[in-house]
Amino acid sequence: MPSPFTQPVRSPFTGKTLAFLRALKRNNDREWFRARKAEYEQHVRGPMVVLLDQLAPDLHRFAPDLISDPRVCLYRIYRDTRFSEDKTPLKTHVAAHFPSRKFPKGEGAGLYLEVTPQWVWMGGGLYRPSSTDLQAIRAAIAQRHRTLQRVVTSAAFTRAVGELGGEQLLRVPRGYAKDHPAADYLRHKQFLAGCEFPADFSLSPRFYAELLNVFRAVSPLIAFLNQALLDRRAAPSTSRLTMLGS
Image 1 (spheres, rainbow, N blue to C red):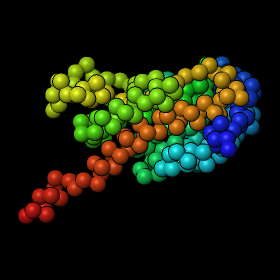
Image 2: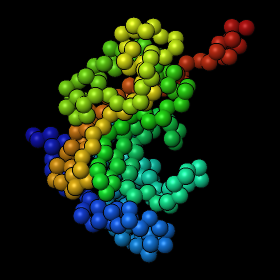
Image 3: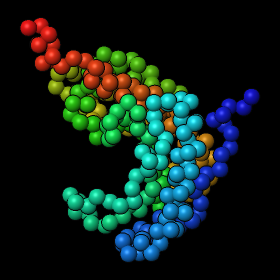
């Protein structure tokens, strides 16, 4: 019986998706967009909603904790310009994130897809962990670095996305030995894994199968990171331990 992951699924994106995004990049203006919002809904947002619906059952097979729901996953087209020097009002890409249902909104590691006028990026990880979350992840790495190493050096992971990426410190963080066996992983400030394709790949018959391949390869990394955060949350705080011991 053929694997459910190898069944050909037509990409919902079309040439009109990329044409609209390219036009939006040239005309990043609210009035221009307002006059063409119906085109955006039909050719950009609509196909992403279709994709999220397609992904929901397939994602559940290998990453049941992750959500594929347009109400949760789809990013808004409007930019938040309050604290940015760039005041262009609209994003010139369509993107979705796939978070874990075990975390509040905006927290935890997840998968990510972005279609722009120039490229498609697919993958996931943890882009901006808080200092508390980063401490929890580093503690988990120090204790279970062999597990993380198996994840990021597996054949599936390296074939799909290469190696673990993200910004790193120049030195091992304070509190860990310089020659710690997980020194390379402990230096990470971000934990990212993914791959980039030309924008036209979003129209390819291979797009959906490759998206599943990348997401399936990266999902064990997401699971490792999220488990580290859940373990930290489950651990009693110092203040609680003090109270229990008093």
